[in-house]
Length: 155
Image 1 (cartoon, one colour):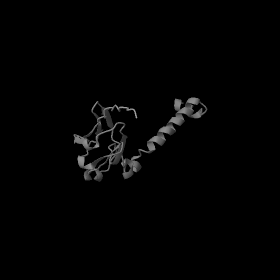
Image 2 (cartoon, one colour):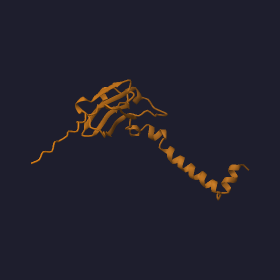
Image 3 (tube, helix red, strand yellow):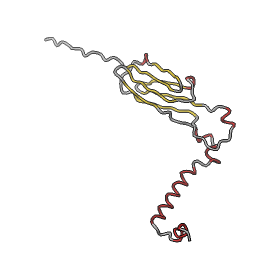
Image 4 (spheres, helix red, strand yellow):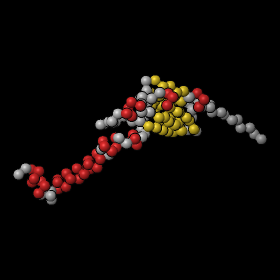
């Protein structure tokens, strides 16, 4: 008699209950990765969220976004009040679509990331550049007006 036979016969063991719960959890989790269903479905990788970094120095705020496999024509950047929005679409090439995949982790589809900018910026001087799959947006900070001293005169 094997250990498995003993465990199956003795269903009341607390560890067996945990074992069943974990099996059920992983079975449900991996059901989403069934090759015959999900990976052949176009909706499986319909969108993605590119990773980004936001940094700041005394004169500007810089946002860099990883967008591998894309070009600048596929990207739109806009600033509305204090919200910077980056939109785009990573397209699947025609050769990729023709293949029958066993495993697929690369993401394709549309994305949109919005970031609230907490400082006043010079919206007319914003610059965006794209090189080697990285979008860099530089937002120059608005110069603060010097505090004015207002003279109080007697009436």
